[in-house]
Length: 187
Image 1 (cartoon, rainbow, N blue to C red):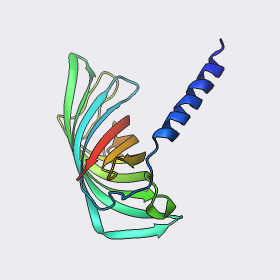
Image 2 (image 1 turned 90 degrees about the horizontal axis):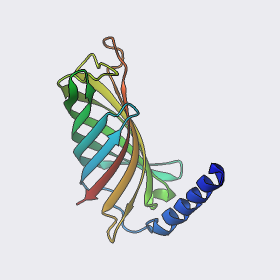
Image 3 (image 1 turned 120 degrees about the vertical axis):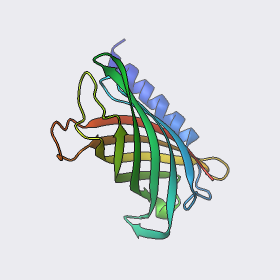
Image 4 (image 1 turned 90 degrees about the vertical axis):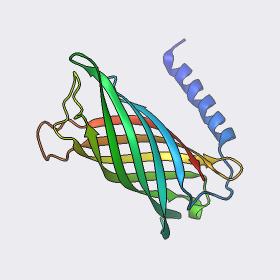
């Protein structure tokens, strides 16, 4: 059987499953803190594991583009691991990012879009077989799509793309990109 029909059937099945599992609009955790676990990877076999905390901006909200915009602080600690010249290398990365979240349907949708730009510090400097980050300090940006579910919408899932680089402060500046999956629990 050709690959295209198989992929089309798989996509259709996944779409139906996500539609069936899609959370219903309920009380959303608009102004609650969350703890999260996150895992990510890049094409060169670099892995990242993250634990973090989000702190909402309780006094800031805007209505725009048919949705509600809110902000939060994202504080995290990550462990990056990849193959180095002498074996597996690890860096601990601490970061902070302000993030904006757009929740459609005037803020009633369980689905959301998110973006943020922040800063991180790696120890030691991240050096792999494929690239060398020339600074410990880096800028971090991300884009995400996610949704909340559960009786009180306390569970959250995000699919994220994250980029880290020094913004041209020092060469080389190859940057580091991750595709990440995050689970957060609001409280």
